[in-house]
Length: 303
Image 1 (tube, rainbow, N blue to C red):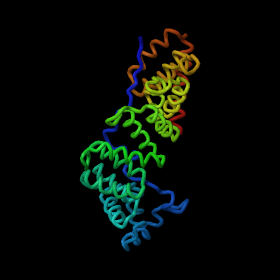
Image 2 (cartoon, helix red, strand yellow):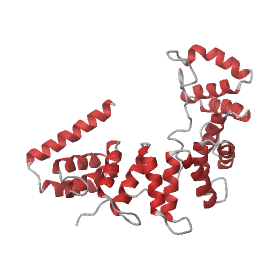
Image 3 (cartoon, rainbow, N blue to C red):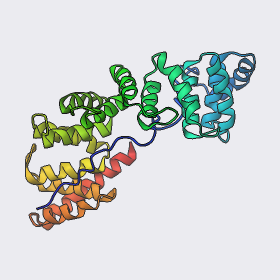
Image 4 (cartoon, rainbow, N blue to C red):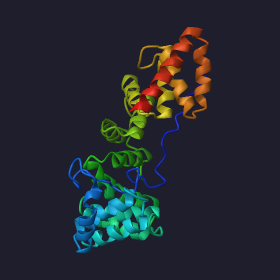
């Protein structure tokens, strides 16, 4: 019998620093329809005069490399100046640069310091990343209780990465009994914010029904959310649900489409699933499914 390739997400071994080490909160920084470099001279002048906000802006400019090569060392310098004056986003960016070794030698103790400073001021990204350091024992002694505390504080603010990370600790039990329902509640909240790993894992929990009520229709809906955003395991599992008619209507063409997309992204088990689907399909249906998959790829490339 063909079995699903679940590849259930494991606890995060590295730092998901919001996908990049800068926050790049450019919206409020510069007037609309103006290049930041129209104001570069004024920004440099104000930064040199000790204005923390302008030091932060100059750090962003060097960090992004707008108008020239990126200069992480200069970005680090200006974020440091602003962070020392209490600029919150600079403190988070400084923690991230230390954690990733960008613009400065990697140092988890310094990363932990700046994340804690920002976390205690209520910054959810800093709280999440501080929790990761506690969970992994980076810059601190490993401390799961502290990890849960800081994940919880960030999750309570609606930060999806923290909701996902805390859900995984609840699934593991964290020294006690696992709590799949509490994990699912967190995953659903993160999934509804658009966080793909949470969408996939919520679908998996609802499909399997271990410790919670199985709900195949909801499982398929969460798999669909993740699959549409390009999650290969979600595409495979959604295809299998279409193939078997579980949680969705039985649709070989749609099943094959998702298998093609999963295989395109390197999920080898999708090839076996495609073979099973082909046994039930006409050549015309296979061609239609491939056209649908190609159209999906083109649409995503155009977005």
